[in-house]
Image (cartoon, rainbow, N blue to C red; front, side, top):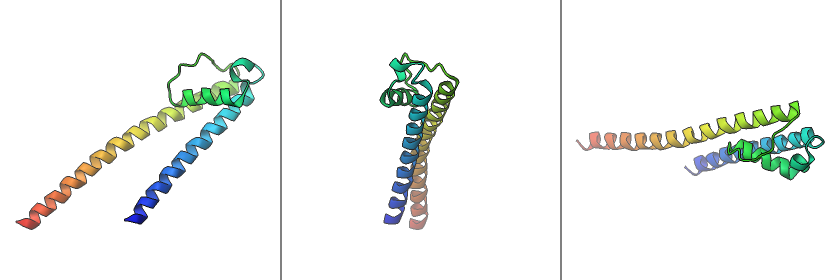
Length: 116
């Protein structure tokens, strides 16, 4: 049983690492594409990272918009992947709860049959 928990922890760590790497690459590419056109909004990697995080989480309250083709594609991919990850995350939570309830009820059913 301990091996399963470690395996789950490694999966979660790998997932978080992949998302963090994606966000870093998106921030760097957005900074690279937009730094010369919009130095006030995307003049530093930190401001590009803030924009990417806001876009990835689909909050979208920032007033900046990219103006180059590369910046627009980066923003589109960031929003698309953020939306898909968000949907997958909630589906994962809901199905894990439903699956646990199903297994719990199934185990009770087997115990009831054994008692009779």
